[in-house]
Picture 1 (cartoon, one colour):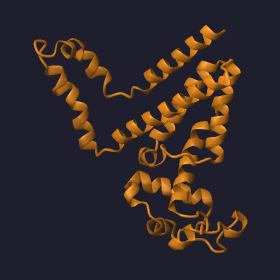
Picture 2 (picture 1 turned 180 degrees about the vertical axis):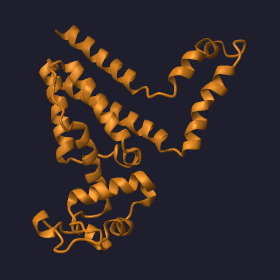
Picture 3 (picture 1 turned 60 degrees about the horizontal axis):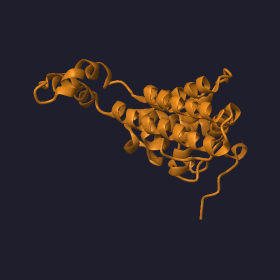
Picture 4 (picture 1 turned 90 degrees about the horizontal axis):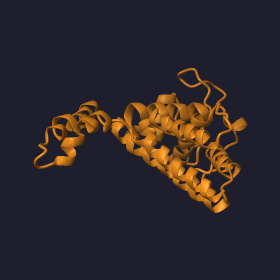
Length: 234
């Protein structure tokens, strides 16, 4: 049976924690995000979270049904930072591009959290609000509902997939990440045209571009395809 979640008004501690703070849902999520940033997913547990908060581990379960419930709250918090303060400019393509880059950036600001949460579906307010906004942009642009859903599906999955891919790179130890980046210069750029004519011909471009995220280019391709379809259907 799922644990009962105590309403916010009833779950506040009467006394501050050892750090002098009163526990709240937001403080726990913020602390969990910090722990993920510093220690990765393996370092996040109710016991360690309780220690970081200066409270007993069981206190966490007054706010969350379990650690997975906390993970979903973290996912919604990260999504919320992407949507915070966003306002539409009125051009559907520019608006979707801006939203995609904002969501991608929000996850990369928390790479360890991205690896843990970007594949999850939370059904929570920030995620639901973002989905409503994206679908509204597409339907407002004139896409029929089946096309709006298809493009939304591709748009959000592309964004989250790149977030996971790019976050995995950022989450690597610095030495491993730098070693991977050097492969393009130290291996690919030195391949002879005799055996690898295509790589040799494009080597300078590969060295210049392959260590950057391909997400902006992929996003532009998706939006160009959607725009072309809209033009054909008009």
